[in-house]
Length: 292
Ligand SMILES: O=C(O)CCC(=O)C(=O)O
Image 1 (cartoon, rainbow, N blue to C red):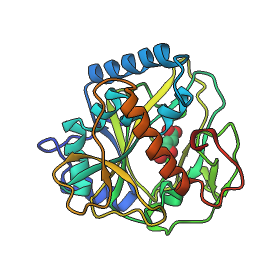
Image 2 (cartoon, rainbow, N blue to C red; image 1 turned 45 degrees about the vertical axis):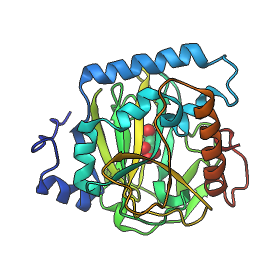
Image 3 (cartoon, rainbow, N blue to C red; image 1 turned 90 degrees about the vertical axis):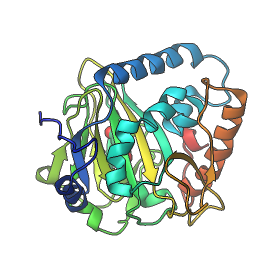
C-alpha cells in the first residue's frame, strides 16, 4: 500500500501535476476524511434501504449508476467537497463543472468486473484533456476487492476502437472493451482506502476485476470538466457548477438536490438520462437497463 501523496496548500505541486500528465493518472490522493467517507457510505446504505422498493420510476440502480448527484445529496456534496476540488483545480484550473457522479459498487464475493476501456469513447465530448475523473473510495479498493487497474501513458492514444459485449457481468453500460490486449505487466493496481481518491484522464485505459473480499467495494466516481468542453454528438448536455464560473455556457447548469429523490430532481434526472442515452447508446446493437 502506497503512502498518501502529500499536497501543497491543499493542492497538487508541479511534480504531481507532471506525473498526472505523464501517466494519465495519480494516486493515492487525500479526498475527504475517513469520517466523511463513512458518513457518505451510511447515507448511501440508508438510501438503499429506504428507496429500493419505494416505487421510483427507474430501478434504484439506475440512479446510483447514472448522475447520482442529481438525486442524492451526499453524492453532490462529495463532488463539491472543497478538498477534492482543490486537487482537481491543479488539473483543470479554477473553473470546474461536475459532468457526472456515479456509484460504482461491487458486492462482496461477486464476479462483476469492468472491462478495460477509455471513458471518453461514448460520451460525445471528443478526445479532450479537459475532463478528469476523481474516483473517491467509500470502502477499501484493493486487488482483492476489485480496485481499478490503469495503463500508464495510454491517455496519449486517440480514442481506440472498442467492442460492445453487453455482458451482464460487466458494470459498464455497453460492456465496452478496448480492442487492445493489455498485458498484466502494463497494469498498475490502484489500491486506495476510504477517503482517498485517484484521478484519471478520460483517455486512460482502465478496468477492474471481481470483488473476492468480504466487504462491498464502493466508490463515488465524479467526472469533472472545464467549461470549454462541449457536447459534440448530442443536442444538449448538462453540468453542475462546482467552483469558479461557467465561462462558456456549453452545458445547461443544474442545481444540487436538497433531499433524496424530490419529484423535481427525479424529473430532471430523467431529462438528463434521456439526452445522454441518445449519445451513450448511439449505434449500439443492444439495449441496457441504465440507459433504457
Ligand atoms: O469502478 C470501477 O471499477 C471502474 C470505474 C470506471 O471505469 C471509471 O471510473 O471510469
